[in-house]
Length: 431
Image 1 (cartoon, rainbow, N blue to C red):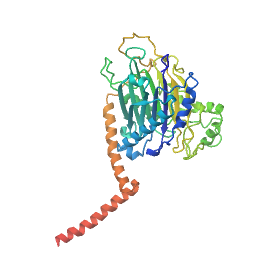
Image 2 (tube, helix red, strand yellow; image 1 turned 180 degrees about the horizontal axis):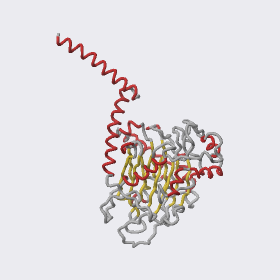
Image 3 (spheres, rainbow, N blue to C red; image 1 turned 180 degrees about the vertical axis):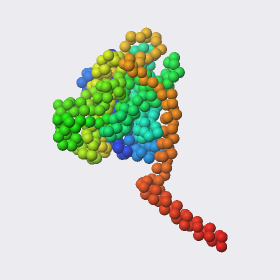
Image 4 (tube, one colour; image 1 turned 60 degrees about the vertical axis):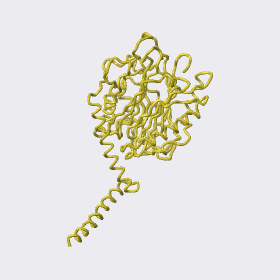
């Protein structure tokens, strides 16, 4: 933490395309170096981030995630990331894992710098929710919340990080908006010990909010638009070639337009995502070659808000976006990872230093996020289905030596063989 109380927060997100342990390269310096280069300009001495938050989507093969077999992959990812962070940060800083959360293939890990705020982190909470069919976790979100004590006031400040994977495909815009609303109403955290209320709270009940992930919002250019001359994917490819064209292209970004309409991500802000190329959909193994099966889009995003942001100026945040970019060199997925470096404002002393309530986000008067009273029921219906379907799928995959289809064939072949063996045995006994 700097002398004026500003905190550096680095946030990264990557859809690893169901790769499991092979989802990230051994050397993660490409994901960290841009941050360190920018940090050197901010003070006479290079500074390490105070908080790292790293989210993943499609962490491992879907059947393993549904079956709840993500622990080994997540533990390996944690050890690998922490070793890379500590290797490449200025001064070889050490970090503590604040918390990790996973639901099927959506995972989030948050780290705090040992020589800084890690010693004042308390009241750590994790949560998850599913937005797939029947609330299953093939899509959904995980969250991590904690309080940093004695920051600005006796109560400190609350930090909330949410990593999400929303419904895919360009035509499913309404479902993505519904996913966001479901996450707001069901990703509920217990009240903090200092809270006078005993009711669960939404992700908005926080001092600082960070929302990241493969949100799957696409670029949609109306057919009547003059840029559309042939097929849509190729027109977008043409517009991606330079900064000026990408800035025009952003006007067709579904997420940006939903934020402007106030239908999703209310109160959240985002850096200039159009300064880097679309993060999806790439040909596997290619640094800069898109697949023509999908319209290239900025599906992978990072947004944020802080309690000093004014609801009257929704386009402006008091969080300084130092860096927002993608990492093209990662080629094992059809997505590119994104990274964002944020400088938080100094704590305010508007409230009494002895107050027991941390400062909270200020939202437009027209928007009040409401917890779903059936949130717990919905979450566990989804998780139960996850485990049942995932376990059956996993068993069939084992029977098929890696293929569920072969496993189904082997299962019925074995059933036929058993019945064939059983019938003569019974007939012989009758004789």
